[in-house]
Length: 408
Image (tube, rainbow, N blue to C red; front, side):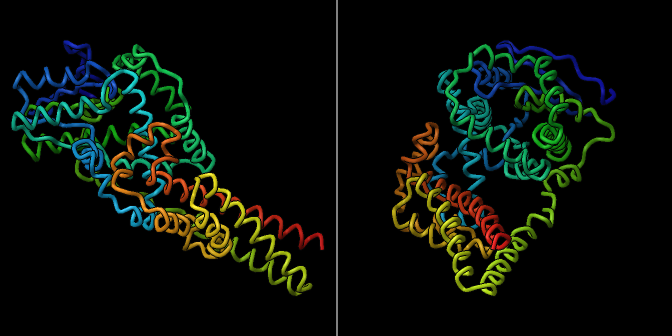
């Protein structure tokens, strides 16, 4: 079979699309599911009940698997360590995506990831191994970030926030249409044309990655009859790569697990801005002490003021807001330390979240107001809003200093 050919698609008894692929002695059944569908979990159970499968592969990475089988893991999160190591934006992105999926699931009366949970629990009860085949979501998001321009990064962030703010209900028949492979293939083809740089890391690379992991499960782990439970949108892509010659190997997994090195410019630009600001101060004091102190005042008021406004919008503790005003003008002159790190640490010290905040984190962040009500989520907002305020303040204050120097 050539890579351009696809096996004929079948339909399960509950209406989910099925594809059968043969890799030498190994027979792989790909089951396409909709992650908030009522019938997808039933389809998983019915297929496993036939007893023909030696193992189950699921579209999960270790992190998402842990969150699914151990939802209380968030209660054990070291929040300060997450902030210190720069994982706050990733946590917010995961919570936002989870909130959107949970909202859909509650609308249709089913838990998100029910088909994956059904696969894991049924396989466990039958004594069958579960193979995790998806790429780590953090790696995927970082490769997306690296693959797009800075203005499209803002577009993605706006899209995440829009999914959280939107309250438009989605009809169940629209969700069920996701199982129609031909419609989904057409939608992806249009998406690839309009935003190829997003399509590749989000869809195409993961298709290759999951195909490579499935091949490894068949060849190295010796599972002759494997059921792979994946989102319907990945069916044709995974099938295509499974039938590719030569077969995908471990080098494919290693390649797609690699985070591309960051460009030098994002690391150089902050130091360049600091140098310009410092030069502005020196020029100002050389012209006159009065002008020099006016420039310093502009820097403190604009940078610190916007960081404090960010903390205020996150309903931070009054001392945290004051700390944002004091810290931002200083941390902006040292790109190694962010204003958000200082304000989040202050908020964590002043209003330490309790165990209940961690336990309710996923549930509270489904609703917009829950982000402010939950102690953990509020600290994340303090971190992000004060960081954003300080970043905007750095540029605005820089322009203000340049304008004063030119006009004096």
